[in-house]
Image (cartoon, rainbow, N blue to C red; front, side, top):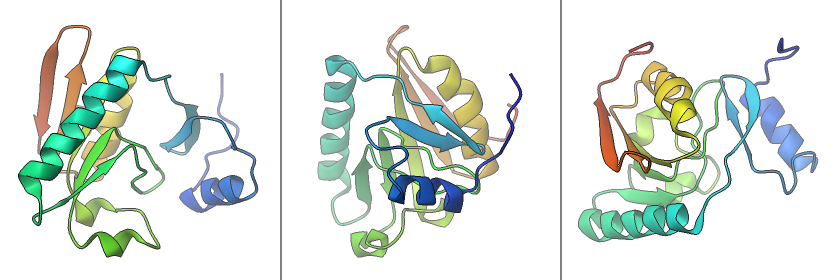
Length: 151
């Protein structure tokens, strides 16, 4: 299927404000509005516990965001966890951008292919220094440091 229109982050925000995407679990990936995989209770609990652990570990050194958007060029993914610069007040009127982000974590079962391919390339193109994928299928942690698009 051909994509007829690539959406900008501004277009995406206008759709959100207009209520077009209300109650639809979507994120903007490389200009496409993409449906997010449903979270199982285990996925949610694991991501939430990981975020809480990192909040304790990194208190006063970084902000740990849980299931919140980050703005990367023509993408606005919603990673399970994003570790970003302080102060948290920087994000009262905007989402974190590449300059703010230390690392991103995705917990994946049904979204594994998307997380290891599409999102990996998006994060690499935005120069996100570290990207972790918790692979629930294989029970392994995939760590990508200084990733480059296409690799």
